Image (cartoon, rainbow, N blue to C red; front, side):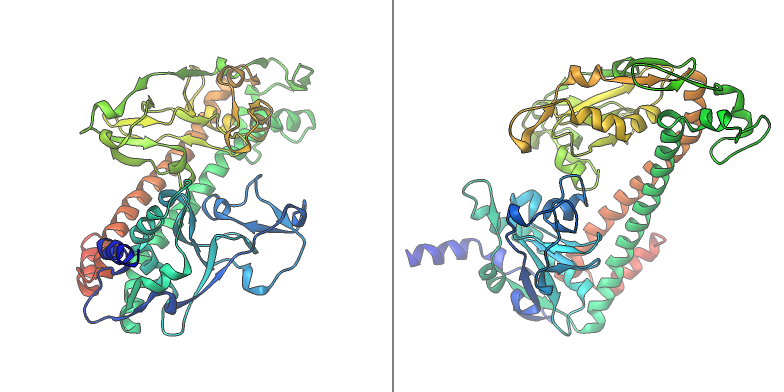
Length: 456
């Protein structure tokens, strides 16, 4: 048996012996940092308030309605702070094994995640990119151990895999080059988030709280005057009072309708596997959860039936609706795009617009209604039925007010998509440079020149 293990290790030698420049110092990866595993929490330790328990779901998707909290106190070694380096070492290899900077609030670390602190002499940002470089190795190691769908990268693996590092000046230079690209991506993310919040806040004010009507009723908005979000030229578009309806008070003259009255549900099926050489933008559930960036994949790798995704639609997930997955699709004319059949492909019906549909699908009341539609006993595979979603009651404003909303919101959401588009370009550039820098194929001076030629 020992001979079989040795042969197996030899065949998989690339997993444990990655390529590094000849002049870098080499040692077991485990010795380059302190690795502290999280705790195995029990249900009795959870509460409705306190500090969040940071699992892989929180690392990838942030604090959500599914996050557990605890008021208990634990050892400081498993206390997670904003900016900590985390390594998820267990789970589905392709989607769970990865390294992250924690950007959320302070919390407690769950099991299957290491809190990683590089030793003295190892730049933390350089070490982050070293782990990113090694991700294919980690995935390969975890995949080799899969038995029931989960794979692991253990302490022994970290002791066996070879790490390497240059002198501190070059570490910092590599960290600076790659970090500059990630900083631009993060800036775009924050700008995109702010622009989207502005559009959604306007939707809430006009179509949920009915702030323009209330401002007129209370005498705060007078003809010829402007309020924040309420320019004077819109004054006559809104009525002067609210009336009772089956959904509660709504502006006079507005109607009650169904979600299906404002969207067309597209059901165009496509089998990408039958077009193996065609490059598709694949809008999947994992791709949404990993930053709303569709994966470019050839048809040969997509082995199940999908929905065709045309330009200008909104995707709404019916799977586990307590997790908000509403996707403002960004594809160019002529691109081939498909999505998971867990999404509804929605096109706005005239006179409604994509901006209106997107903000409606993300509004809290609508999200609450969808969550009330779930069927299925398994918490991980609950779904809302399509017809039930399309039959949800909504308030339907006049087309003139929808058009006024779109003039503002569409500009903000278009700029959001521009930020995401630029971030995808920057991420592709970073992902091209990273393995070349860590393997020594490209040295720092060449990389700096490469970025300068591109205006970065």
